[in-house]
Image (cartoon, rainbow, N blue to C red):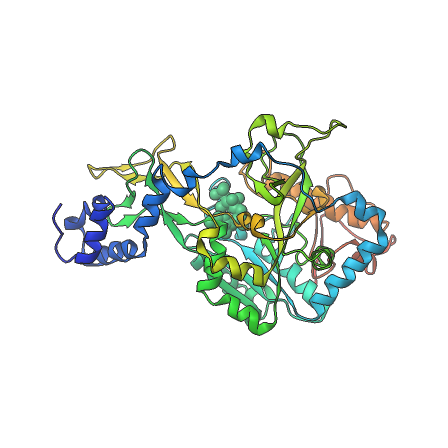
Length: 473
Ligand code: UTP
């Protein structure tokens, strides 16, 4: 192929060197604006990296596979089980105090990752906008922001919220927050930062795919893209200036995660952890959850898709699952630890996933494949775990804290999330002595009560309530 008219020479040589000149196949058909868009996208791509990742000699394929590693997996060393906490009120109380102390000193920030495409849910907006509130259809974003605000009010210090978006979610998310006055969160405590993208390649040829004649098929670079995004957007400096050194990390799809949970924060500092992870007991060996385990004395997470069934099924002498600890993707990170990794780009590997990616074929036809045709490259934030000196693994009550929204129907769907929220709020009311009709819809804003203890200060057994019930500010 010869260099097309008005395409930069050096960029063309780069494409040629990496056998990606097919990206210019439709150049002559494009108008000036489309040419500029395509050129801009090509400038963003690290072709050498893509070639390395795709190539069989590439690092990701040459290294020991996660499945091979899993053969040596043992239970994680530093674990706090639910029953341990229940059995030691004093220890748990001391952790809560330590966490509250951090919060009252303004040392805690919260990171929310909301850059995913939410393809399984099939919602046409960013997932955070999904209306999950059982009575008021409150969105995931609003529920989480209200929790953060309520927690900050209790601490007497603002908590900054760092929300990661992507090209797929940024514009709509920012507009949604603006339309709703940030759900009450002060502008100076709200930060949006955008993660990067990676191109999709044809699984058999390694060719980068065009989604349209003038547009490359790209997708967000995974939640692990957070580190580069925090660094490149200057968020680490913001945190430093504000004196934030401990970061609560959570995902947008779980409305029941306890935002900036003081007890979790407290255990994290008391155990001198650099990273902590909340886990739940897996329901079955087949459950699709990453497991937290130790390999060669390093605590890490192995994705369910990488876990061979015979390892997932292993049991201990009592017949319990050896690898019981399923990750909920709720973490606490030390800021300095994340900064170190962000400065060392090679530490977080890319994972490959075979996906169906629509593309323009060589005849110019738009193809919507029915089978996976492409490879997407993503980084996972949990790959920071083995780099840490100390990882704390902290078991939580799944019913209370882990009810993610992933699918349109069946498990982890709007239906299960609705049921979980009604169950949790009803239990709080029952604790207050109120009798809740079977199957009633209940929603309690975090601004009214963050938990059952706070609810008890407002509701007594003789309080007159009607259902469906919404308790708000
Ligand atoms: P998931 O891996 O469940 O992906 O993300 P998803 O995009 O929500 O849904 P599917 O897989 O397409 O159906 C877990 C969390 O990580 C965030 C998501 O927004 C969600 O909070 N995430 C995921 C990102 O922020 N960026 C990404 O590139 C991927």
